Image (cartoon, rainbow, N blue to C red; front, side, top):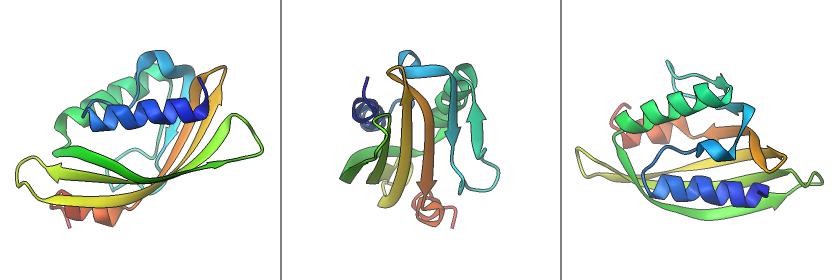
Length: 134
């Protein structure tokens, strides 16, 4: 799959309120990084099985239903296996009904048609405010 197709799969998973990654789209040695993750959250997860376990567990307890992924801008790079994506996730807190949004930037790298590396820069304050932790 192309980097764009993998991002579109991730986007579809978000909007279906499913864990972000599908097993068949991950390289065995995939690396997921969130350098600005909230305290107590990992900034780096390595390996297909660990990524799947972490994201499945996180999605199960995350109190937000994603309603939209908007303002998506995909930047091609000189490397055909790498894209940079800007986007905004809009969600509703499942307990309070409050709706909020947060901007993100992701750098996505594929290898042999699978996700090899995803580095996501999150607006952690906006996320914390959306789930009532700020």
